[in-house]
Length: 273
Length: 170
Image (cartoon, rainbow over all chains, first blue to last red; front, top):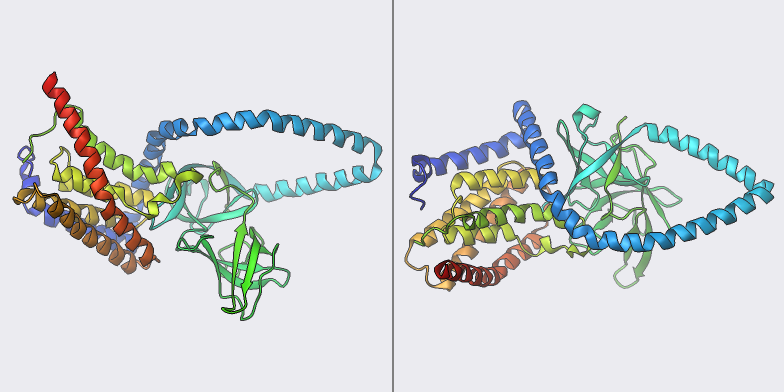
């Protein structure tokens, strides 16, 4: 087709060779071959960081309207916060009960610090949404102690698991990925189920393997279970809401609420133990 | 065969293809993206269009490399997109070399067959690598990409004719 291309591009050999290499890559990738895995980790690192640099100006330009809205609302929020702080200070000074509560909160914050020590903070450099995968790439990798299967949280809410670890970056498989299957416990009875990604459904999530006739309730919390030995137990996944039960089909529909905005996850924490 | 487009215009095709691959990462941070990725694969359509219209930098080797970039970004087994892109490229080259290129319908039908093979390959590769996939979403995506082509074709034809006009005036 292209007269200026070299002999390699013109010959049929390249077609056979490139198709063979592509097939070989797929085979090596699936068989987790050690040397290929290391090479792939380097390629993934280079592409992830290059893509971040290339797309950064475009993302920033597209974010300008949201920054403007954020600045406009920030003033109002600051005013509200300062009013609340004044009220809080008055109440704290007058009420011993509130002082004790404050001490309890302080204690809780200290406990939270211990909890935080087991995690590392990572910057999200890429978010990907395609028909084959829903993932995020972070700027921490094997060198920072990350391993496949590590849970990733945002605002103490599970957002996914580490799927692939490179040297200086890692890919997170998000909860709404079609390949995501998380063992969970639901509600006060701690009923076991599997929380899986379902891109074809409206809510993008599906709770599978619930016991027969089990009915979800509004406000039921979903926590991770350590049944498979990979995930740490007790991490909040979400809260059930908008539960509707259809008597004729005996099916229930529901929504899942999260403590974070999936479109505003610039930083996440990864459990590294 | 079309005469090669000149200067920076040559870069348009390959730049747009790369941007379409990166678009999944750019749009993913906006709630207004409306899950557009579900309804079409613009990369396939652009590769077909620019290969068919004989743009520079489109070759088997380029398709192979771009496929690896795409696989690295989307996290599917390395080589899957490379095969899909090379198939689309090969069919576009074949369609361009036969004498039916002036008929848009034949160009569109050939795209349909190229897309069908590409989607089938991707699904087979995902199945063989033990990954879950939703056939319905892939079918919708295939139909969306196929339906998108006339719009892309029309838009770029206008753009190319305007550019050619400007070059002639200069």
